[in-house]
Image (cartoon, rainbow, N blue to C red):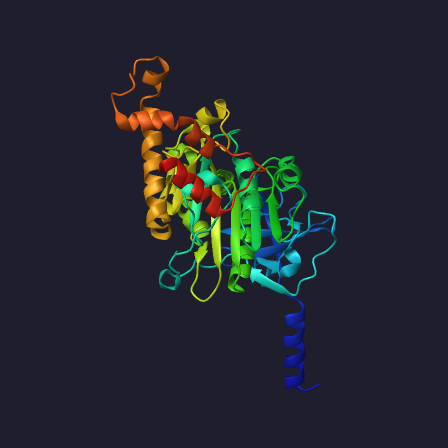
Length: 434
């Protein structure tokens, strides 16, 4: 055998037998290994001694060893288990076969419909749309809910937040939006919620109708890494459909659980805790996710609704505050309205859509502004009216607000199965405000 032939054989053998490292130390949150030279963020595959395989992400690099966080939990790993670099990185299967399916953040089916049949994959992590490539939001995106379409009008490609405390009605509102919108593709991310809420959401809020819908699920019992990348996986799926020229409705519940997952990861890596224990990486991660939604020139759009759980109904919570600064509007759900039996309990005075004035007609704008003013007057003087201190005739505008009280409350109220088209909503709003 010639020297050249021997070199070629050794080269082929090296390609067929990838270099592997060995686990050297295991802590409750990070596993350390040596023998490889990875970059920060690389994906490693681990071969457990029991024959199973697992994935992890490199989060620490030291002199001769590196640390990775597993996508599963640390139970089952042993010192001496082999690891190799996964050259493909984090990829998610994409294609029209995803429609109607329920998947985990790695693309594994969670339903009973068998394996996915896709030939394409897309990176889970990608850059947001470049600023100069973003399309102008100039089309209305109806969702079938009077309070949103009429007062907080949403535009195609807009990013909106739904801010609410626990048990106020976020899931019901999400279901109404999914059923009421005419978007051809719907991507729903359920991140960090209770396991029982997944089948309940499909059965109660979606009426078991997953047509043109993809669900990405990472429940509260999943690892922090799975909860974190569940949100990015769902956004990657939405981006795939957007890049094919289709308009996508993206809903994520909830940003707070996503932030809590990054808090666990950041604190385990030694980041300093700041406000409410959140490390700095959490605040920088939110725009990396949210800015991937929007409208892109020459392609489709992603209209996104992100739910934010505000602890104790405190809108100054750091995650709520940061989210409001990134998003193009916020819908605040009020526990007080829930107590009065008004559903969906949207507080129209504390809510805002930053693009509504640019996409609605002057007639719609005038009607919306008058409605808000009358409703605001009613709320300001509610106590005086209830105790009988206000005498009719003192203020003509307040008199008008009192006369239209039941009509305005009827406009804000809506049964979860009652979905109106945009023109019907607009006519009702104009009638009340005229």
